[in-house]
Image (cartoon, rainbow, N blue to C red; front, top):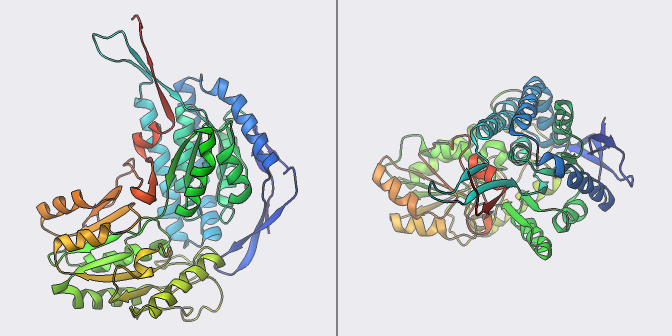
Length: 477
């Protein structure tokens, strides 16, 4: 049993102010494999106090010093790669190859991209060649960073590394469901030699630790990734102190497959939604298929779903693992049953455990056909390996269906007509539009419209979120 009960506060590993043990469950086996502590308001206060004191010196630290420390972190991260792979695989059920090639690699890529941004960034410049106005970019202050369980390193590195590069100090609360990778990350920060108080980690739940962070008067900014429900609560709690809040929330992505799409468009769409066991906020969970190819598309989708293997995370190979927790498993199974009751056709998968797996939070790749956009499975974020297929007749109808949602994180379209692709992409209301299966580059902005959140992460856009802009008049060069 792994024990990681201490918090990282003011450059030291310290015991919780109040013992409150919490078992971390391996979703492949349903057995506990680690014990952490859930923090209290006092632990949060101690971490924020340390961050506030450290901010006064860290904000003045030279860009060169920050670069040196971040480069040291990057070296440590790559050296301890296998530890991070195993941590994420066990805590959230990602198969080992996927944990390495996707989860852990995301952290490394974001770290390197942030280093490049910091090297090239000019924190001060003249407003205009004829102006005596001077523009200065300054760190926003003490940041509360709250991250989810579905992409642990992607989300931690997306927040922490740009915040450090900008000159901010912080408290990080990883998800208590998948916290071991966050503790390992804190060990790397400590080994890199960042000054005490600059980075702090307190494990805990949203009701206590998350709530206290978002409402704390000494927190200048909250960056949260998670459910839309929790995002609303955080924004309300932060309102009294007028702090900046950035939110990356849920999604219900639409994937428009036109009759002139490339040959593997349907199969690729199925593979995309099933990756990470469907636990991706920008997953293309609604596949809209143009009527002339609807029957063929359904057959391809079902065939592809039935080819996808489901197995324990500790195995290498091309398969999907379990859902992260019993709560998530029950939610997904309930929505699959809701789809059946509402009259959608269950074409593949279903609520039963996959063959040869009688333990663990496993869900079979599931396909619903004959879905309409008013059904719960078409409107609610399922966050599991479940795809709804909806027919459409015209381009305008497809656009209307995709946009008919409270979400707007990622939408997709498949067509070999370049002009149609551009035309449709302009009309879809989401933070990212993926054409013909092309992924976003490292450093591209990521975030949502509508109830998928506000603000952007990634690249220069994510870096700028942690900066204030100051205009100074009468500046003499």
